[in-house]
Image 1 (tube, rainbow, N blue to C red):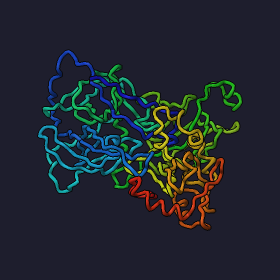
Image 2 (cartoon, rainbow, N blue to C red):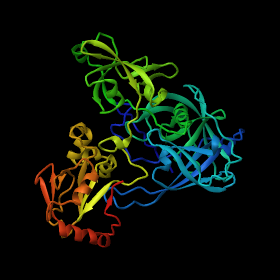
Image 3 (tube, rainbow, N blue to C red):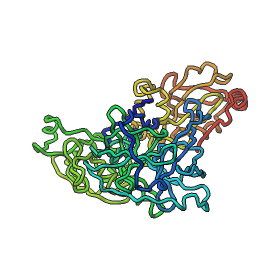
Image 4 (cartoon, one colour):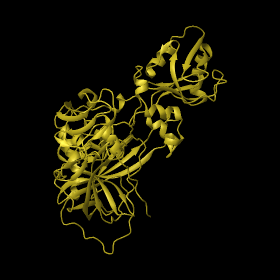
Amino acid sequence: MRMKSHFFHAAIVCCGILAAATSFSQAETAAPAPSSAEEPAPEIGLEESLIRVNVTAQAYNYYQPWEKGKPTTRRGLGVVLEKGQVLVTAQIVANATYVELEKPVSGEKATGRVAVVDYEANLSLIELEDPDSDFLDKARPLTLDTSPVVGDTLDVWQVKDTGLADTTPCPLIEVSVENYFLEGTPFLTYQTRGSLRYHSGSYVLPVLHGDKLAGLLMSYDSDEQVSRVLASPIIEHFLNDLADGDYAGFPTLGLTYAREIDDQLRKYLKLESGSGGVYVTTVVPKSTAEQAGIKVGDVLLEIGGHTIDHRGNYDHPVYGKLNLSHIVRGACQVGQEIPMVVFREGERLEFMAKMTRKSHKDYLIDPYLFDEGPRFFIAGGMVFQELTKPYLRIFGDQWRQRAPMKLLWALAHPEEYEETGREKLVFISRVIRTPATLGYEAVSHVIVDEVNGVEIKRLNDLARAFEQPEGPLHRIKIAEAPHELILDVGMTKAMDERLSEAFRIRELSRLD
């Protein structure tokens, strides 16, 4: 059996979530062609440092938001750290309903729980459900090694069905900044080359440098024999942030840029020949960049004392050329201040930027949703939702071409709605045919502006508006023809009472 992993390509986004995917694939550790000889069992006794993580997960159905999809199972190989915690990727525990820890050697099992998860950094810590359990008492915690450089040999660890560990030495061939499994969230990534022998399908495999943890393998391309590894400096940042018990996450800069490689543009901007810098095309409201004073049209020259070239890279002292996002995500903590230099209208300006992190919930359109269902409200059969990127992804792999154009426009231009005070974008996702909605069955994907005279800034406003009709009719104003939809108040209430039985809808709203 051979499979090929999917690689996630970094967008031109500077340390901010502007468009993040929620659809993700298993790391699809391919079953590569067997090597000519069986690798000998490793002499280093680290089997007790590895824990199998078995997860049952159940995601929500965005077309019918009151339902969940079918349960799925995932399996990974985690690493025991100090304090009895097991480190895995966030990808494996997304939408988890049950987490089980298993000792590879003995097969002994215990129930776990997700203690901390960061989906952007693709990292998670699992703890034992029973804090008094001695399940991990004999485990050997691993420490981090952040020293690997190109040319070093890293060992990818797996566990055979016999419980014995199996390692594959793989040279580190490249260090870059790429998305992990969400778009628009680039992080430091190791790339290694080596033919991996397949042992028990896994979402994640530990990668060691000697007897220390160098990273977590996220995906493997069997054709190229190249693995993508979540780098240990990112794990170190994650654990350091947790040290005080208050996890703030990785900071975001909140801007997008275009490369400054066009000579005419550089001449128009009055940039000196041979100078670097990138052209700022978008600044996210309330972001680090906006609060620092960065504006659209600026040319970003320096961050944190590092000169930015015209491609958006800087010279890292160890790894060489890296994308500028690593300055923010790799070296900075939330709350830290760093200098920034821009070129604006022929003048060089300096700013101090205080690093902040904009949560995915603070965006007009949520870039991802895990471990929670989509927010919705049903009135008489008319289904209202807050627009999220997971919803757009129900249109398939080509969703950027197949999803409704008006919703894609909102995703690309959220500022047009945010300027009017909207916190979320409420729309009619579908209309269930009932006596209350006759004639509106074809209405879908229309943005709601007002209900019963109440301006709709988020779904809670709509729910309150339906509780306060101005007479016998609910009046719903939408952004396109026919511009107003009418529901009979009495009929709507009657249909709400019947929907649960007729359509097996257990709840007519989810507002939290």
